[in-house]
Image (cartoon, rainbow, N blue to C red; front, top):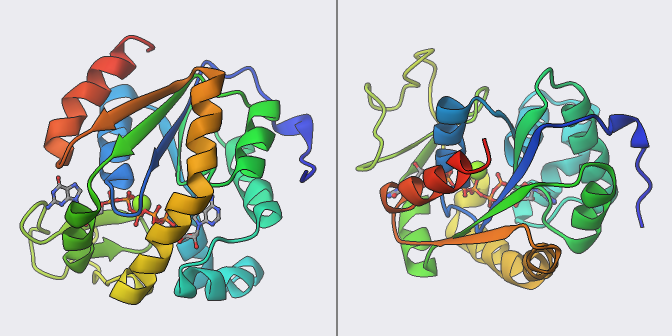
Length: 222
Ligand code: G5P
Ligand code: MG
């Protein structure tokens, strides 16, 4: 097991995780949760892409994993996310994209036991359609989809006006690899949280269908 300092354990009021296959809408639903409930949001993928774009040592180390659609090693991820949690000024938070493997989930549970795991269950055919039209603002992680949540000006971020780009790991062959990894590696995480008794499944084809269900569930906790 990967060793993590227990100094990141804080008296948290509400700790949540959002799980779901690539492009199932974790980021989109997370932004609604942040707006509605004021949780701090940590997206592991956004943090990694930020390091890659800024050519940090960590970015150089993880770029090959992201570009190929492979998971970044557990030790790197656990250290990164624990530091991010430590740096928050908010005891109510939501992790998006972490944990993704059983060692990550067990380690997190030992230092920061989560109260709720939101598991988005969206059909693969819907996901494959979505990734083709996804555009992102890398510095903020804001995400758009042509025909669903278009930017006000095509190709530009709504808040900064900076250019949007497509993620290198949204190429069809890389998406396929990410979906495979999700099925093989993250299934154990889902089973683990189900056994712990904190997992709630949300099934549907669109974010607008899932959001009211997620909102009602969160309202019973916060
Ligand atoms: P990420 O960044 O965590 P994924 O693969 O888990 O990547 P992704 O792709 O970020 O997840 P999402 O957040 O679930 O998807 O979905 P989203 O961005 O909100 O929505 C997808 C698109 O659909 C968007 O364009 C959105 O606008 C649109 N959309 C949403 N709802 C609807 C709808 O109802 N209708 C329509 N038409 N469109 C909609 O991880 C990336 C990589 O980082 C590494 C790995 O290499 C990974 O591959 N990584 C880790 N490695 C190891 N361990 C970890 N814990 C790691 N975390 C990240
Ligand atoms: Mg995301």
